[in-house]
Every structure is written in structure tokens, then in C-alpha cells.
Image (spheres, rainbow, N blue to C red):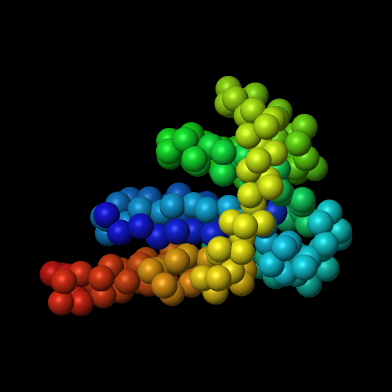
Length: 202
């Protein structure tokens, strides 16, 4: 099954929008035989955006506009969340290889930040969200994962990832989120190009 790695950060409104849109597209992706593999990174270390600082109003307005165009309801945070503990927890959970648990964690954190306006995403909040789900998030494992997050982010940067969400279509880093129809078209063309002979039966 072709895999598409999706680089994301829990701080990003557009990643939340992508999360919701990909949920809507689950049946379409299954029909294309495409599997999404979500991979967290620390966008602040890529962009230099200050953590927990106020987000400029034009940037907030742009995120809200994209969400509205894609029919995703969202509460855009006024400050850029420091998401490192939540991203570290995702690394810990992902390492166990249980995609259902990974998906449950993504859903819980995204909904907490962009629907419930819950924050900050500090270690205490992350631990609380873990307890809500019945997940054991060992402090040492979380600290190790947070220490590993910069290297994880640099690996993404080496693949020409400059923002989130970014969908890795083999070596092509496709950044941003488009309409469901556009995303389906992009995924479909990618699948056809990967097929023997560069095409698949219609």
C-alpha cells in the first residue's frame, strides 16, 4: 500500500484543518489504497516563530479563511502554542506501532486546541489528556522524545519540508491543504504515476 507521510504540528490551525479534511476523505483514500502516516515536527524551530507569542492578525485571518473555504469549523488560537510536549507524546505513541492509538491522540489534542481552546500545551496538559484517554505517558519517555524532536524536525527539513501540513509524495514535498477534490486529484495522479508503466487501469 502506498504510504504518504504527513508532517504536522499540533500548533498549526492548517494542520487541524488537514486532519479534519483527511478524515472526510478516508473512504476515498482507501479506494486509492493510500495510507497516511502522520509525523509530528516542531514548526517553530523551522520558521523561528516565537512560542506562545501572539499570532499576527493577518495570519489568523488567513487560517480562518482557509478553514471556512474548506468547511471546517475552528477556533483559531490568538497565540502560537508551544506544542513540543504534545508532539513528543505523539512520537512516543507512534513508536508503539498502534495506528488506532496514534489517531486517537491526534484527535484528542487537535480537538482540545482548536475546538475547546484548551491550553497551554504544557507537560501537565499533555499528561491530563493522556489520562483522559487511558494512555500511559511515562515522563522519561516523554522527555526523551522531546529531546529527539529537533532531530526529527531536521530530518523533515532535509526533505525540503518548510511548513505544515506537508504531504510527502515520495520525494515531492507537497505543502498546504487544498479542497477535497484537489487533494483527491493530486493523490490519484501520484498513485497512477507509481503504478507499473506509470498508469493504472481506469
